[in-house]
Amino acid sequence: MTPIRKVIKENKSNNIPIWIMRQAGRYLPEFREIRKKNPDFIKLCLDSTISTEITLQPIRRYGFDAAIIFSDILMIPYGMGQKVEFKKDFGPQLGALNINDILKINEETFVKKLSPIYELIKNLKNNKDLNNRDIIGFVGAPWTLLVYMINKISPKNGLNNLFFKDEDLIEKILIVLDKFIKLHIKNQIKAGATVIQIFDSWAGLLSKDLERFIYKPTISLVEYVKSLNVPVVCFPRQIINYVDFCNVVNPDMISIDYNINPKYLLNKINIPIQGGLDPKVLLTNKENLKKETIKYLELFKNHPYVFNLGHGILPETNTDMVEELVNIVRSYK
Ligand code: 1CP
Image 1 (cartoon, rainbow, N blue to C red):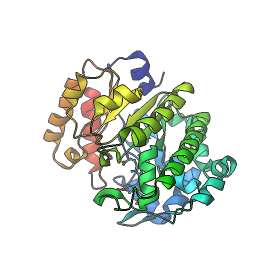
Image 2: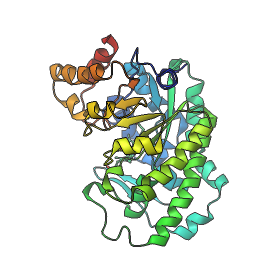
Image 3: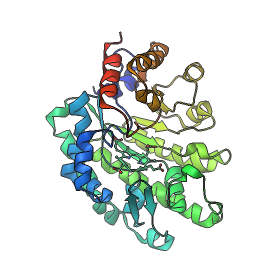
């Protein structure tokens, strides 16, 4: 059995698996080399030969226990026909949202547009370097995708005042997102994904209406993935109450950010846990890295746990520090 499935299915914690969020990306010189030659990020994601290579880069370098596919959560709005661009030193920029056009997109068109992503997964499945590792497929949660689709840019400086203005539009998008996210999940699993992770990176923006924007739409996806017999991991970053989220949504594993006190959570829930370590720790020194990493390993000694960070690895991270992190986790007994 693959390492993450084992933690989830057998509810055991010996030989803690490790992978890191954004492991295929900008902190790797070999990724930056490819990126320089490929200025169009969407095109890069849709070139299955190169995206396969990028997915494998961190596996070759560090031997992580899981490969997360090189893609992006915004490939779903792209597949639904909204323009998506990634601007240097700015981040994503989405185009005008025309709901009538989106409602006309049929499933076949969507799957065809995103088919290189499924090709990438098939390539991984047939790649010997992967040797019993998990292949993590992923989607953005409906709330986080809704945020990008309406706000058009990263909400890191807050949401546009008019965000909640058009109730009817929001309702229509949530319905159509449920359909296309499920379609994307189904096709990733059909191609060979062994785990699905749902990224709700902007869950922390909400302090009310969680039922409508987070619980209800996420339960729909979690139940769908479970019905396909594949484990589902949720990352509701900075959600106001992780305990309520776990009790209500009930994913197979919860991925935690670095603001939640892991000890508190451990005593309150009994599903497997992933992640937690602040990615900024990798910018400090080896001694501090060891101290902070051991804290998580000790704490989760008797609980099913997958080692990971509390958010994506920062682009300025030194590759030696990642190697040290892997050594610390691997040599922990
Ligand atoms: O190893 C991997 O994880 C690579 C695959 C991957 C994943 C899982 C990428 C490649 N993006 C994602 C998920 C993703 N994309 C999330 C959820 C996880 C998280 O919170 O980090 C989010 C919110 C996005 C949206 C996005 N795409 C952003 C964030 C913008 C913001 O609002 O702050 C950015 C910068 C991108 C571009 C992107 N996606 C991936 C990479 C390597 C990059 C950088 C591209 C570049 O400029 O070279």
